Image 1 (cartoon, rainbow, N blue to C red):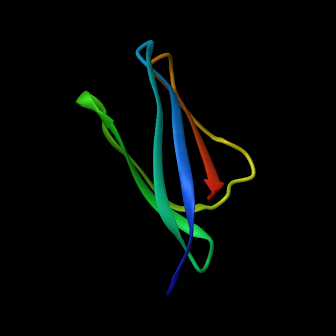
Image 2: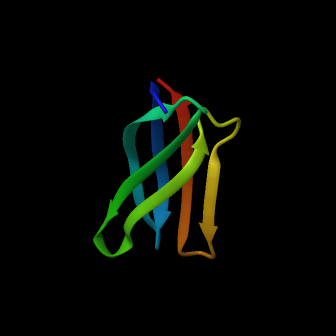
Length: 78
């Protein structure tokens, strides 16, 4: 399995009302167009780990947990 182009993963949002990001991480894309990425959120949150995410995604990925966490994840090639 080879390594292709770079993908840029950008995370923005809020955690308990506190703004997060933008956090930007670049990772290599595999030949099958997928990425694995670890995004350090820091503090008590730890890391956000995404596995086998297509690059690029058609739409942003949204993670919402009640009124506590609201994250938008954008995955673009380049």
